[in-house]
Image (cartoon, rainbow, N blue to C red; front, side, top):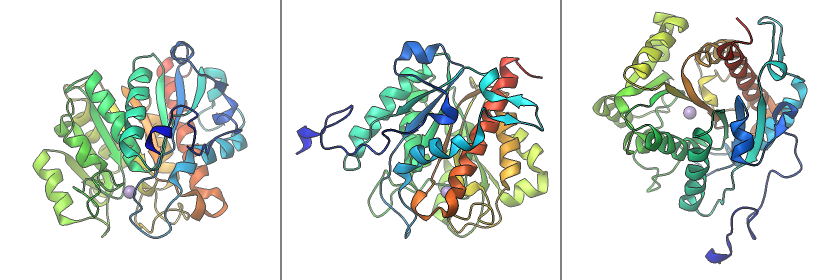
Amino acid sequence: MRNMLKFPQGVGVPMVSGNIPTFLGSKRVRTMEEVNDLDAVIVGLPWEGTNTWGSFSACEQSPKGCRVVSMRYGNGYIPELDIEVLSSLKLGDMGDICACGTDVEKTFSEFFDAATKIFSTRAKPVFLGGDHASSLPVLQALGKLRPGRVGIIHFDAHLDNADTFVGDRYARCCPLRRVAESDGIDPRKMVHFGIRGPRNTLQQMEFARECGATTLTMADVRRLGIKEAVSRAVEIATDGTDGYYVTVCSDIIDHAWNIGGPLDFGGLSVEDMCNTLYGLAQGPMLGLDVVEVYPKSDFNDTSLHIVAWLVIYALAGLCVAKGTHS
Ligand SMILES: [Mn+2]
């Protein structure tokens, strides 16, 4: 059966993202020439690998869900910033990169190739995951294009740098380990931000220390204040690099807000994370992903709406970077 798996539009590969709107109804783009004409491009990474706890699943349907709920937000106007994203930014949506749930290597090779091409355009990519492993091929592509010069700011309750999950090296709790081990990535330019709670292990913290990554726990963030904590992360991630890639796990947000997400308490508020991404997108941000949303357990699409908000505030930051707003 393996040779029947063809990309794109593969025979035997279930397409979960047909007949859906683009993010904010932005321009649908298909070729890299079209992407190159944009300021920012939305890209879906509909991947779900090994499930590590209970019913937190269906990540592969999250890009579709994000696009659907984005229809609630019109042109992406944010009154407190007085920025209307769609009129200030050339935004497009290139749909999803093909994934096959039975073949992680083929899927990640597709993601790697697509990310390589997208990073070679002038558009800033915003990737919609996917479980957190979706970030791995994207960061590997960036590491290959800019060896040793990629900063990483990782927002998460969890370090996500386990060596394996019951033998699976590509499980959702492992990607930052694989990233740290990848060619072209200097883990000393990586910051784990907002880490908290007992869904982490001592071994993971030891690996973070050994590889030279910086961990800012939620306690650190509260002690410093969010703005100062973010500026420390930026300082590390921009030291000798071309800029930073931002990867956001939905559980950076406290469960009180992210009620469809994992049971991780004591995190940031949606407002704090929106403002943080608005600020980071104004700086040398190489790209952004938002991952780990579970549409099947997401009451009233709450987590999906949170992602839409995060992305729109990040896009507003790109408007400022572009100079269409101050
Ligand atoms: Mn997480």
